[in-house]
Image 1: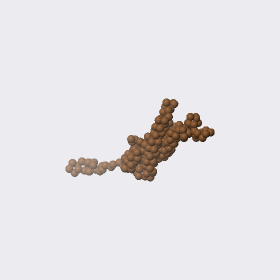
Image 2 (image 1 turned 180 degrees about the horizontal axis):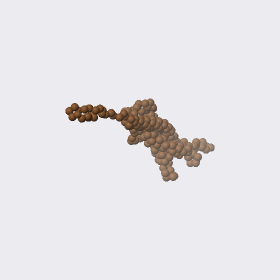
Image 3 (image 1 turned 120 degrees about the horizontal axis):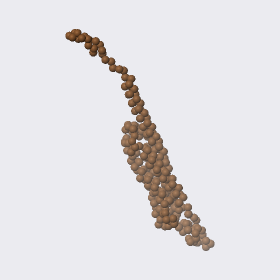
Image 4 (image 1 turned 30 degrees about the vertical axis):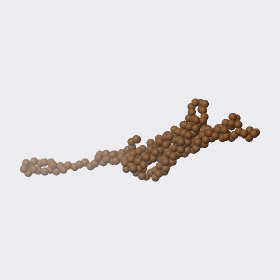
Length: 235
């Protein structure tokens, strides 16, 4: 962990003055739930798509798989962050820059995950069925290939992808809010550290100046005569 010149009392004062710690805890809990649901939904979508469709590029369903990176990271880190939030309330040492870095990482991973999940979603292929003159639906017809009557699995996968993208967007927004809180906490920590260093420098300079300008010590040089020896002595 990063070292800091802050004393235990200074750290405890920062945490006690943090009126938003309960808001951060609630955001962590909501982000954990949203990440868990998004992970399940995208995992189900990938599994269904691999079983029912063949990727002609040979790369697999990487667009939905990419979304697992931010949600798994969020799911693993948020419980740790909640535990650390409880620990720092007791005055333990933990620099808020760790939250800043991890929340920024999750938030940054969400951006390409959302873009590619939306752009590569199977729901873009949805199309209504075209009925012939006899009122029948020919599933061999090209335009009916992804109709709900001819390929209901595509609609199941598409709905699962849409639900996963919604929860992924929640993770994106929540971690952006947590990133902003982490920036504020890091700024307060740095300002308190600089104030503590300035105070120590002032005290050290004051002590040095006090020693340099201290009044000289006086020695009693009064004369005294020893009557036995008749010699003048200086004391």
